[in-house]
Image (cartoon, rainbow, N blue to C red; front, side):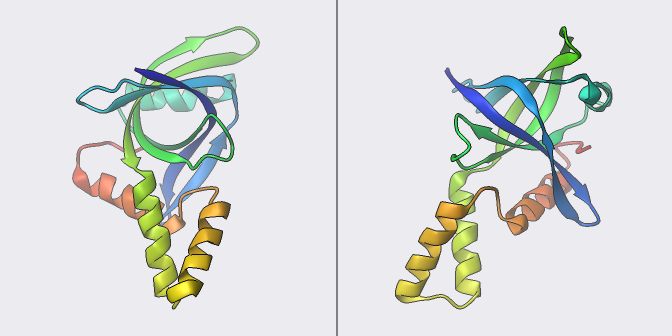
Length: 164
């Protein structure tokens, strides 16, 4: 088992055929890689009470949420995960703690491949491709929109998850 600090949490919601990110400000949080055969992770985040209804509705409906998390530092690449709400705990000062069970939906290698395909599609080659790739990877703060749209549709079509 490995534990990391949760730096940020975003909800990835499908609207109008595209995926839109909605940042959820976190007070504190952690993410645990269970390192088991099921490749499960647990995300715990302390957030504002205003999100309680959203997460309670997902839990009641036994639904799933596609999220983007950044671990340890804002400079790290995000990880897209498919999650289910395990518990919601009321805290003091208008805060709640949410516990999400998660599986990786999009890995860093998938992001790298998507960036490379995009650059080749835009006509880059040889040394210009290498330089453009370096620039893209240095400034990549989130998943490319095309990758998020693809993974969201794939998850929806799989029938394995009930996305909210």
